[in-house]
Length: 212
Length: 127
Image (cartoon, rainbow over all chains, first blue to last red):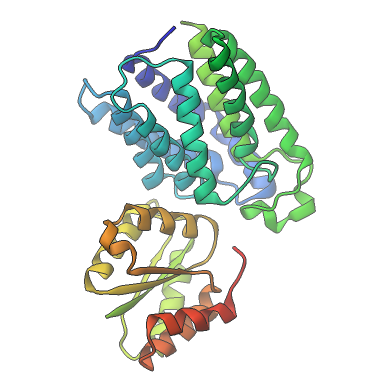
């Protein structure tokens, strides 16, 4: 089962819609333990990505579209999520270079390179109440499924459920990274907004793939 | 020429620290970038990158930043520079206000970049 660049464009536009719909919820999560701007910052970034995608040539390949999204996020989010998600998309984009059709193994590679970039930039590891607490387990699950030949819709359905559970689990962690680290133990009981935005992105991807 | 670049989430903080630093910098260039394009609190990658390109064309740059996205955006902007420019940029982990004044005084006193960076260690924060 494989996906075309048109489906990548569809996914990016769907992510922009999804972030817009959830911006208040994400900002509210951030207001509890951070500086209260995550949702609106992300929405600004994805709005810019939408414009860039529309302005780009119609025949853009997946790498170009993912890169354009990365640059839009880096330039327009304004918070730490800009460089972090921007790096995720930028490093991920390099892995799809020259590919016309994308499948589950490509997604695993995309996420692997993206996560490495995020870790290098944010200097965080698993279990520090960040987006990585969703992305790392999700990547591992998708990579294992790609290896065993699981169909993409089933694998992503699993990944989406895992993402939700992992995002919820960030409640139990005391933050040591980002603005939430100023709260330390008092950040316990709150979901990390970055983990939630990552979870929502995986869920959006799963829904699209399920719909064919 | 060595430039001092000050980054903050807030335009007012960046400009205020620049004012403090310029008082003692002996004319060494001090650049302040604060806030987002939208005028809100945060970081503007394009503004930082543009200033960094201009400053590295003239020589070395010492960057001090407040935290979080200021630092991450600075690192991302450094990555986006041409390879031969990257080595000219030094991102200090020092406290923004105290570090900036110390760096400015040291620039006025003719200290080299390596010496200034070493002095800034005194104001190192884990951020």
